[in-house]
Length: 352
Image 1: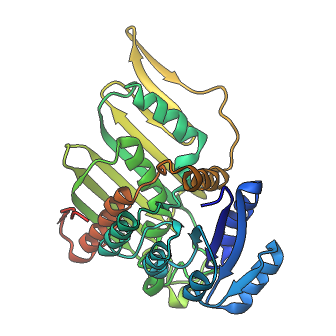
Image 2 (image 1 turned 45 degrees about the vertical axis):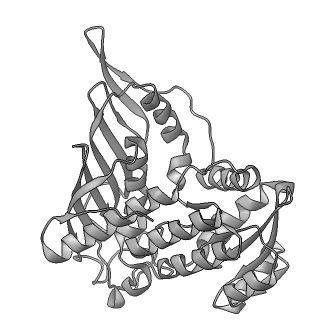
């Protein structure tokens, strides 16, 4: 591989044009954007023209066949993550796949297996990991300032934040709603800070109470007549090490705040809230709260893309790994299964 990463984009929607492409361009001479593919050729051409990308395709298989690429970003609806990732890996490309990893745990396992077989990097777009708050807290955790983390809570809640664009409310294309779209961000953040423990049991419930009727849309007017996903998900994960995680995700819920993205941790030596960062401890017979007076300003996506590029060029492992992606996908799948059956679901991870 040359020291200039030749990148292709699969999917020309908002996450590609707003996050991936602009931040690849910020990498300067390290990156050359070669091509973009989208099933709507006009959209691919429009984005290609806007960002001066020389080639546009309506078929990513053709792009992978005709272009000499080192890496791709997958920015499609969830249904197409796995097939696009597998095709790119088998074509010899490193892959940055937007969250969630896939639609099912078996798909995520296949993606991980192909990445291992090809020796290519496969990582996922969990950009909150790259926030200064998470990075700072991870240093405290690694220094054992929180001790054994035995309880956590992850919340991704919106008052009326149903997306009024894209296919986010289409279960066939996305696999679900609030949980698989925004809940995965805080779920991954919590799991990452907990050391990605192996899950044992998941008990979850989902609700569709607001999305199927017309209402105030803070993210634009949504297609309430064809709303086929959950607008609220709540549940608990118990891990094999005895720790527990409470999870809440909502596109629309009757709460005070317009949006809440939060991870809270409790350890035997300290606890923390992440957004904004605050650490709680008992030291020298005193209960203390620790808040940083300064954290660097950094764009989460900008850091994510820069690190992916460096991983591809240097061979350093990515922050988000295929194994973690399979664990997270197993949890999501078990959560939806539990919500459907009304029973707790046991998780058994497979080797790949």
